[in-house]
Length: 548
Image (cartoon, rainbow, N blue to C red; front, side):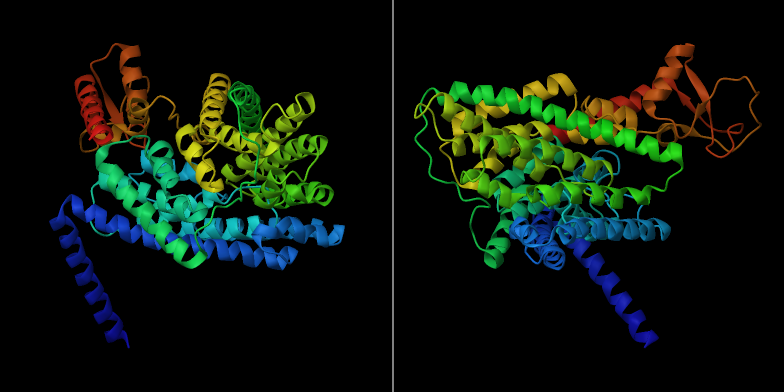
């Protein structure tokens, strides 16, 4: 038995070497081959993830994800309240176990921000264990009613699959980042049946560039995922766009006003989520409370809101369908808008859920439908129907929250299958994004990364200064005599930006570098010339990657 296992390992290593040699022999075509493989694997991963959400929803509410609201309405209030509470407890236990056994670095589930961090900081590498744990936790949270989205966990799962498939075959850091984008694009394509939007999401949000060399593989992965998903789940939009009266010239400027409204709504959500997260974290640390108490606490609050208005439970696509069909009054739409924002902010702040794209869609639909309903009262038969403005609001709010106006515009088209709102949607998304960026200065994902010590809002040049460490570029030296207590020094773990700033402040041409463990012993030396040369070289490599 032992010999057979050893032989199997030998054969697997040989197969891996052969595949690696083949991939390198194919050159750029090897990336395309792996892009298709990643697209297929991500599609099946997302299908399994969606099935897991449905299984938990059936256990919690006796319904699938698509009919979760109807299932909650059919339950006794106490039973409906208990579902997210029990889900929060399950999430807390899984977070505790995953942190205890070292499967995750921090007790939280992962999403789009983690994929962006992996691209910018970790050369496209994501841990398999963290990816699996996050997918399981997210399926439990969403199936039990957490007010969050499934796109974040799905994108992280797709990126994890890409990282696992490419890491053993010797791809360069640039190719690994491209394949990471392939996994993200495939996940969006499979999750929303939106292959075009999947490509643009990966380019716009994950990679942050539209280089020709990355477009092809990402398009191949997204198309592969869409084909496989349609074979198994069918080809239909997520929402059925209802009939609405023909839009006239007046509806474009009116949609611009809706863009202003959605911009302020998105800004309120982003700032509210960021500040609530900081307050909750600070309160837990100050009181000495374990972080694992937060998901059950979120479950209690979300459950209380959901008993009153079950439309806030889960991803919320059933509420979108009802809104498009005109099932809610103007007053109820405004109330649902406020409650959905509160429930989602609590969910993400207390680590009960991670995705915000789906809540952004729901929030936008509520805002747009309410706006359209108000117009119908003021100008009867003079404007398009509330459903028209609901679809415009869907794209405007979600695009502003994610800071991804191009991909969310395409997602709004592909989710509804309705292209008659093109002009109004583009105007509203552009205005909403402008307002949100002008006030909050950063996207939702950038704010998440800023809490981890990364500021990616300044582009590639800022990322380079933050991610290259002194130990990566210094001239190494054997440990020598300890430095004098007051002598100037650099630390090996400092960023290149911190090192350059210190050299500038002190007016030095170079400084000795001390180690991480013993900050008195010299382990290297970094000159200003070498630091600047390393920065310039990294800038050139980044420029080539972003434009070829």
